[in-house]
Length: 157
Image (cartoon, rainbow, N blue to C red; front, side, top):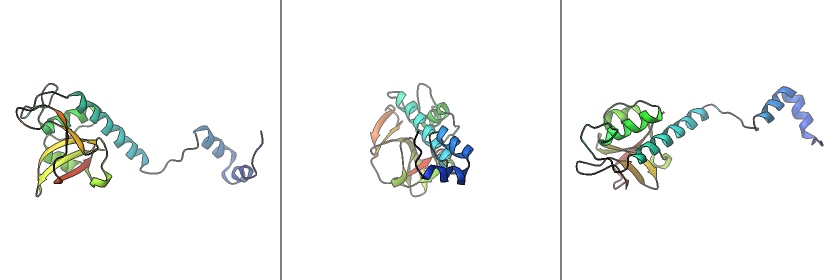
């Protein structure tokens, strides 16, 4: 095996064990905070899949699943199935989430509808300006375009 000139200097500076460990684990470098970001992404992805699996379930005020939901009941249920417990109401969920800007939102984040400081509805962001939610009495869980800019986003960690 031919070893480039820079490898012996790496071995000398970092130590053979460090370089071999680095190579054995695919050369990845861990940085503080990245594990938490990856975990949040996985959690959100799982919750999003759960919400999508409830397509067509009827809206019922106060319902938390598994066969009927109100808005915060759907998000509570979806995140619980993904492994995270959320509070019951949309406003409580907003207060518990890590707030992110629209430019930083990603699928699995919560979408909070508000009037001034009053949070009145929540869904799960699905990407491309759409979300899964339980809209209102007489409707069903569905994927829908976000129809207003009066929304805030929250990430569940």
